[in-house]
Image 1: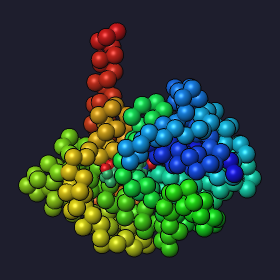
Image 2: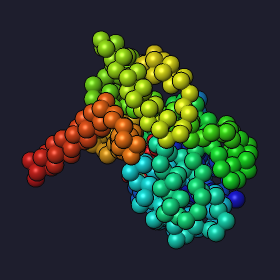
Image 3: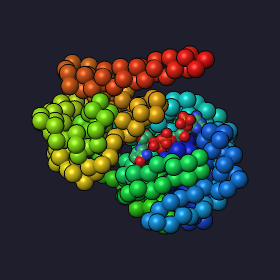
Image 4: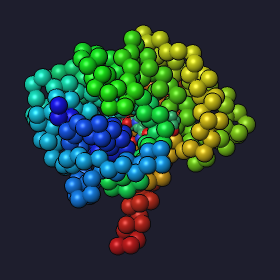
Length: 307
Ligand SMILES: NC(=O)C1=CN([C@@H]2O[C@H](COP(=O)(O)OP(=O)(O)OC[C@H]3O[C@@H](n4cnc5c(N)ncnc54)[C@H](OP(=O)(O)O)[C@@H]3O)[C@@H](O)[C@H]2O)C=CC1
Ligand SMILES: CC(C)(CO)C(=O)C(=O)O
């Protein structure tokens, strides 16, 4: 079966490479530089000290999803709508579409644009692009999904060495991930500190727990039952990932748009719909958006100065 990956970044390249290395026909849709590099040299996966070259097709034309039986959407949340609109006219009638993204609204957003069901997938991987055609696996890699066809998709992924579970409550798992991201990501971005040092600041562990508590009131109002283990997860991440900076911090540092509207911003938006106030999540959203704006203006200034 042909498998298409829309969004050839850290997540798309990791799973695309795993599937190609297992013998599947994989096409990755990304930017022009990526497509040119991978067409020349293949997609390199660095994993467990090995450097594996996966033979994949790399394209920048979304029409390349045509004929795929499985389409994995792996763009950042802010790009979901555009990506959906771009692939919509080219999807095969019976294909299965997955959303391998953080946040709790992407699968629904895509489904509305595509006019077909989209399976939400919880992605437990740490991966990053180290060069145009090189993806480095840093940890885990397992997936959790639900919806029509999920048993077949899970079998295909498990056979390719990607541990995949069919979930009894995938939205609860996506929410749990969201709640943890709400407590960790913006504070890592605002302090600029790795998680270990960040959590050593007086009052910081308490602040993180308060953000979790606030986000959980919104999850409850949405009718989602999130495991209370999220409190423990937020306590342990600064220990187990002491040297790490959040994806939000990394996006800010690179001058790229963050996913904050789909993290704390999602909590704020949904809280408003339920008549709840979530001042801590509101503050986190505002601070990160202000930093994004400053980063953009500073970038603009330096372009003009160079100019
Ligand atoms: N990286 C990780 O370890 C993890 C990430 N996630 C989640 O997975 C999702 C994907 O993250 P990640 O892979 O890190 O993101 P990346 O930014 O690395 O990858 C997305 C890629 O898609 C490209 N892209 C976006 N829109 C289009 C388009 N219309 N056509 C072609 N290419 C496009 C982007 O290009 P450009 O940059 O030029 O826009 C980028 O190369 C996010 O929701 C993230 O939160 C979840 C778990 C772990
Ligand atoms: C789990 C965590 C916080 C790890 O960095 C993450 O998902 C992110 O940075 O977005």
